[in-house]
Length: 327
Image (tube, rainbow, N blue to C red; front, side, top):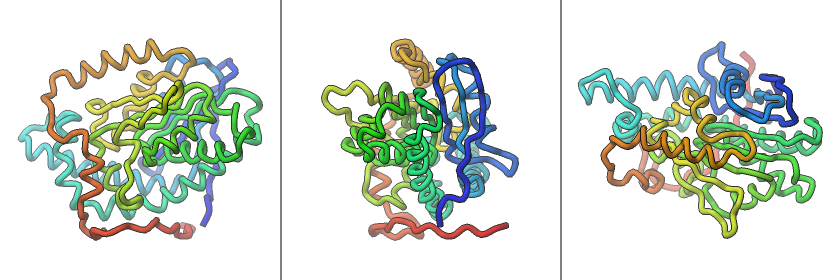
């Protein structure tokens, strides 16, 4: 089946030339929506102005994924961590360290809820590229920002714009992807950066075990951008890596931390210096009191080599999309 839902919802109409499009990676609850995800984060920050929109895509599948991530996985890990620590006050870093062993037992849940929306994300990314290439937004600079599978939509979009050659250039000014289930392959990122005029930002968390498990299940033996820095090509002026380990306690945290993350990364042109300074101060404040943890930077390799219950130890084939059923 194809993508059954692909629409843009207006979030903000401030004066200005730019167009910002937010792409959600999951939704929480039956009354949640793409508009609700991006309303506050995209309206309450210093930007270049212009219109802000939320891409509404496959909401039903994203609600299913959000139900697993938030209601099942996160609550289960928090209960496990509180029981282990003997206190109800559990910080993001402790949650990240308590999660791995507990998550292996829930790998089947993660796998089953992830594969269909991941497949749809690839299709939505291609549609987004074709839509932007038609200049429905006019000849205005476009900023794309997304988390989780929404970030994958953006990377696939950039990939298809790159395949269009000159027709795909001069459209996207900035792209920010957070917790991205997409290869950290340098060649792929360099190709994507070729159609981004200003900044292509990879925001990652080294302790994002949910992303590691889900991505390992469907894309066996590949490094994933949401867990690590992407190698920078020689002479790079576009690709940036921002490590938010310590600020983001797990994959489920990206949604709740959107406002803070946008303030840290910055979406305005020419804000890199100021943003980097803010990020440096925030990183020290968040992680300064946390003792070093052995193996923290090798989560991706540990996940790739592990045998997970219900998934076997061999290569996993790409998941096939299943047709949607009407409720």
